[in-house]
Image 1 (cartoon, rainbow, N blue to C red):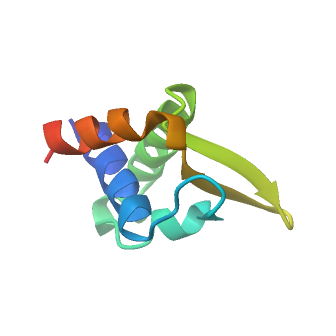
Image 2: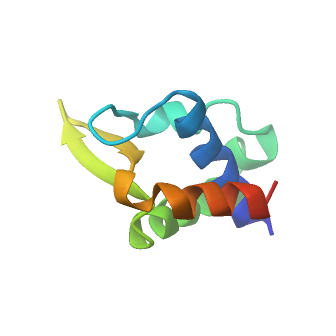
Amino acid sequence: MEKESVMWFMLNKLVRMNKIGGSHTEIKNITKGLPEQFTRNKKGRKIIREAIKELINKELIRVKPSTGEIHVSINPEKISEVSEFLNVYK
């Protein structure tokens, strides 16, 4: 359940920031604000990496390399799936 809650947090943050399609943000920005249990220890950081990988594999977020940093945004073609995920894991 921890990974799903991290995925929910990141997707919710992208929606609140209105980062959909061409509007994107650095990947580190979507992890800001996560509880310390995820950001301060090795196991937590692994959960974050796995959550990001799963969002990319499910094509819920798109990756754009930009200025040496990885930027992400919500895939506009999957916005209904993102909404459904956010409602299920609320």
